[in-house]
Image 1: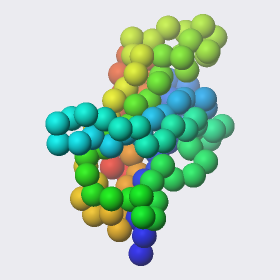
Image 2: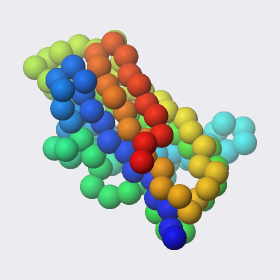
Image 3: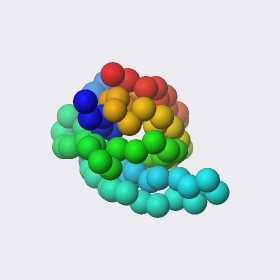
Image 4: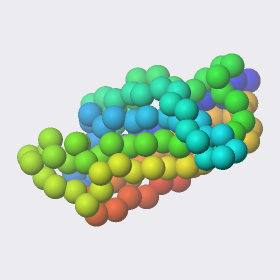
Length: 116
């Protein structure tokens, strides 16, 4: 079995997916320094089109997803947002498992969890 990492963004204020959010995946080293692995943009369903990590690139370690939500809100009828970039740090300790990290977004806050 090969694990993978996926994400999606739901706009709870609009009660639907958040399309057009840029998502950057970074790997963090022991000193907290980041290395960008990939960048993607959410589609009309609020998901990225393919896993952010899979196969041999799915290795144990600490990671960070950066969700660029400020531009998303500015493009939605010129709405402003308290949030600009939402960082979500997490650990992959079982690379053979699937990791799904969704972002539930509103203009003034967010929630995340490990989904299935």
